[in-house]
Length: 381
Image (cartoon, rainbow, N blue to C red; front, side, top):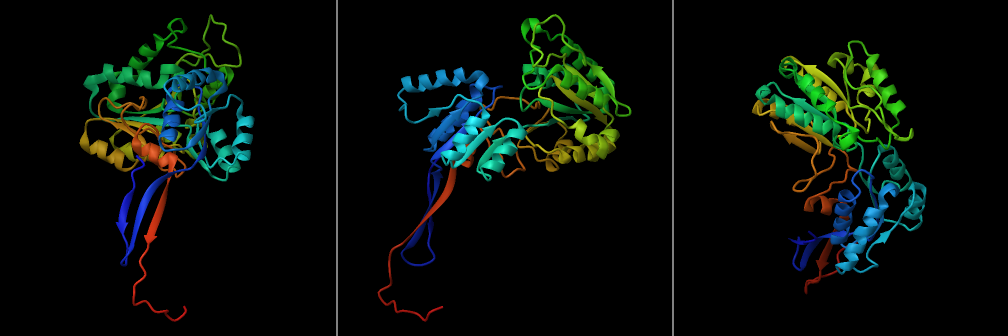
């Protein structure tokens, strides 16, 4: 990954080498929702490129990475290669600033990302919030059961607490007529606290989720497809959210209005999605909505229609976009890039390209060694 390359010079005796160069002192601030996968991928990428990282996992689950570091030590890693910081955000911020950390890689909320960008003067690579869309094209309704199952998984698995969770669903009218929304409702109704297919929401309260639901229901033509209720028979503390998987339908024309768009595209990091429908001549409005969204992380184009696929892919920018009948918004990046696009601050994960982009900078060393024997001093310029 740190392989260099050579370029011939523009005169005799000159040549240059380009290198991927480590930053040195770096910091990793990792989220709670993937306590092993995300910090391990970013930590190992940082080490592979020759950096000295300080790792700040989410304090709710820092024990996971503490144990992983013990594993690395047992496998032979020098104990000085990584520092572990178990603390809350303000302490981590002070260390990042006082220790002159050259780069911070942050995965988490947009609010904290913006704070770090400000205080570090931009020395941050971020993988923050994702308001992730899925578009169901006009074809494929024979695969209704599969697509409905994937929609349920994308929106409500892990109680929707994934930056790649399906936040908004644009369904072609063909899917609506085939009964897609009813199928998703049936699948969602099978989720239960008993088997943890429903779970507490750590970053929202029950009240905040239901208040958001009610604000959407004030939009003309909107309706509650399912959910919108508190979970019953549990002892989840009030500081956390405990709601049924929820879907609110909002008409596309109303959603696009300036006074409604922001509310419709607000990420709720929980089991919640906005749903709408469109007909053949409204795809331009769907694409307009996708372009107006602020965070272009993951997306899905559920269609095997090549022309439809091409139209959507050519007019969108999401960094990790699945296309085809099996397209999804969520998926651990075992074999592909995962990260946002359209944002110069964006950080990737999961591939050699992501590691090089995040954890190294370009350095060019130009060798110029031979002075011509017939050189004479030229006139000053």
